Structure formats: C-alpha cells, structure tokens
Amino acid sequence: MKNTFKINTRGLGQYGIFVAFVLICLLLSFITPKFLTVSNWTIIITQVSINALLAFGVTFVIITGGIDLSLGSVVAVTGVVAASMAHPDTYPVVVPVLVGILAGVSMGALNGVVITKSKVPPFIVTLGMMTIGRGLALILSKGRPISNLSDEFNFIGGGQIMGIPLPIIILIIAFVICSIILKKTVLGRYIYAVGGNEQAAKASGIRVNKVKMAVYTLCGGLAALAGILLTSRITTGQPNAGVGFELDAIAAAIIGGTSTSGGTGTMTGTLIGALLIGVISNGLDLLNVTSYYQQVVMGAIIIGAVVLDSWNQSSQK
Image 1 (spheres, rainbow, N blue to C red):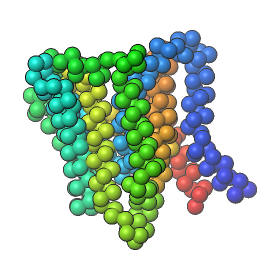
Image 2 (image 1 turned 90 degrees about the horizontal axis):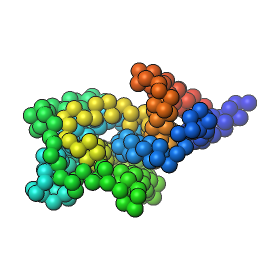
Image 3 (image 1 turned 90 degrees about the vertical axis):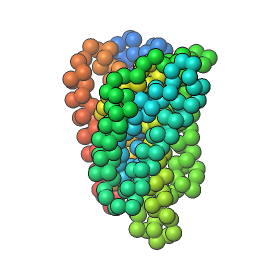
C-alpha cells in the first residue's frame, strides 16, 4: 500500500496541473459560451504573457532553492528606464529595449552577488531589492508616469504579426529558449543539481555560486522583458507598475509543479500554471465575479498547490 501511494502521488505531481487545467476549461466552456472563442483566448494568452515571463525567470530561481521577491520592482524600473528613452524622434526602438533589459539584468545580477557573497537568505536580499527598486522607479520618473512614447515602442506590446499579437510571439520564443536552457544545457543540469542537494553539487565540482548568479541574472532579464511589454501595452512608464506581480509569478511556478524545496520544476508546468491563473481570472470576469472573490480563489489555489507539493515530497522520502 505504501508503494502504491508513492506512485499515485508522484503521478499527481506530474500530471495533476494539466488535468486540472483541462477540467476547468471544460467547465467554463459549458458555463459561458464566450470562453472558447478565439478572441477570448487571444485576450487570455496576451494577458498571461507578462506573468508567464516573470514565472519562467522565478522558476530557475526556485529550482535552485531560492526565491525572488523583487520582480515587480524590476518591472517598474525597467518600464521607467525604457519609457524615458522611447519618445518619438529620439532613439531607435532597440535602444530603450536594450537599456531596459540591461537595467533588469543588472538588478538580477546584484541580487545574485549579494546572496552568494554575503550568504544572507534570498528572501531578505530580494525583499530589500524590491524596496530599492520601487524607490528607484519613483526617483527616475520623479513620481510621475512617463508618457508620449513612440509608435515603434508601443508596437511591442500592442502590435500584431500575421494576425498574432506580438506579446504571444515573444511568450512562445521565451518559453522555447527557457525550456532549452533548463533541459538541454549544462547550466540546466547544474540548476537541478544545486536545488536537489547543494552540498553534493559542491562536492561534485559544480560552482554553486556561479549557478546562483546565472539564475538571478536570468530572472532579472526576463522581468525586464516583462516590464518592457507592460510599458508598451499601457503606453506609459508607470513607477507604481508591477505591484504584487512577484506573487503571481511565484504562484504560477508553484502551481505548475516547481517544488518550493528546490530540485524540481519544468517550464511546461510553469506555463500551464500561468495559463491556469489566467483562465480562472478570465472565467470569473466572464461570470461577473468581483475581484475581491477572485483574490480569495487564487489564494486557495496557491495553498492547495503548496500542500500537494508537500505531500508529494513526503511520499518520496
């Protein structure tokens, strides 16, 4: 009986999120006919794209046994920096994009440096960076939204290529690249090794600090890309943008099967987790459920995912 319980729980951890996603989609399709329309799914995936990019980045971090609470502030700083250089007749659109990504990468790398050199827990370091980043966004923008952005920059978040919204295309490309990094590269194997057993990884010759530096830098870069997408979509650089985004991203990763104890997780699971959050939110909107109840539902889902992860970990010991 004990072995049977282990097998069933492991299967639940691998396939439960996909089954839940399909069942919720079927339920909503019966409740409201608007749910399965092409236009509605385009809206869902476009809205999910920003949270999914953040979730991809934090998946790398959580697999190593870390956490990043600064994502929302990185989104704000990146948006403000990019918007300040994206006015018409100033710089080519590539300049604000690259400078914005550089800002996010720098903040992520700084997180990595402090965590690896000081040995302070990631929770504390990234919490501090969250506050620093929010302050920087307000300082750089002088506390006001930055508007009058160029059409080329606004196209990033609002344009289409062959009828497909550009954020969806960016999401697909990012998913493929992140999946390859995690599953097909030496860095990916090292990420799993560090999260599975850091001491064993050190003993086997893996440079654990460099791996941690890489994941926090990747996380910052993906957060920067999300910040640029958000700024382009709303056509202003908002210093207060991204509040609470880190919680949604972490939720998507955990719901998608990334273990809070490290060593386990996939980009496919994280993508499904982000889509599940987006589908539930969209379905509740279609049913005219107020945002207050939506927060309660999301909180319950997160707790449920963590409980299932805990059961799965316990059953495998």
